[in-house]
Length: 333
Image 1 (cartoon, one colour):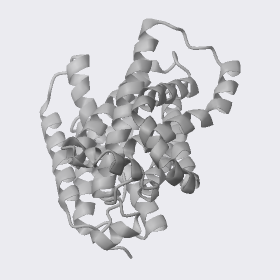
Image 2 (cartoon, one colour):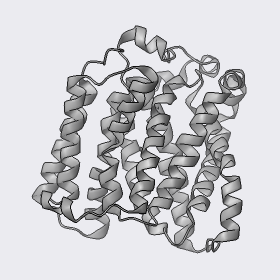
Image 3 (spheres, helix red, strand yellow):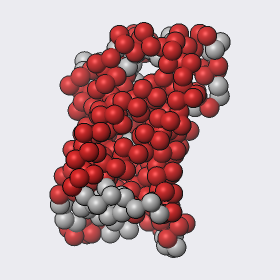
Image 4 (cartoon, one colour):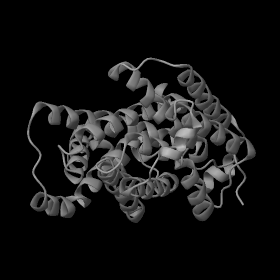
């Protein structure tokens, strides 16, 4: 989910790590990644990220009770690592010196963005309703703004704050079917608390991703996927002895295939590239597209009929994303 900070101007971008410079592997491939049209479309990349993550929430909820959370997270990232490794191998070799130099940051990003967040998300979905998690999702930019202030001394601009407010309003309209009185019926439970902590952890990942070494996106993805999966091995061992083992049926295998390919391999590459291009605060409102897309999926796959509140809510979400992402970069404090 899916967040982050806008850095103002070339000077601020240099303070965040000057991502405009090419990595060693970029140079050996004549800048193919940087010149690709798709890799330079941050709004499309972040929209795809939100779409894939929306599907992950649906699959994760369906898998609850069938695939234990650590097992699901470990297999998701282990499979994603194997998928991306052949594409990333030559970049990893070229970037290994930079990875070793920035190893503490890379391990931090692996633990927070890969191991901790996703495992806690699947754990939360065993204890709470989908409506609750989608509602909590809209709080992600708040955690990003807090971490941005603490770690990078970066503040939201007035336009960005307005965009976040508009997007959150649109999310509420969709989730509550246009009935704000439904807020009184929502009870926060263990799963809601777990997911809130997960969002706070991912907010830190989003901000700290700006401090990652200057390496190819495939190198970054392969290392964090593999390292994140490896960090889950102790918890996986405990889970295998304390909970029933996952059944190898078609539904579970299809769930694993989806989460390994779309919300993992593709979504994380899109998300990290999007944050790299426009900064985390401008990327943060795209979190609100996750519940919006989730509502559309419910209409398409669950047979729900479109209502006026879907149109109004989705329009507010898109307006908020546009206002925040097009605003002037925030000034560092």
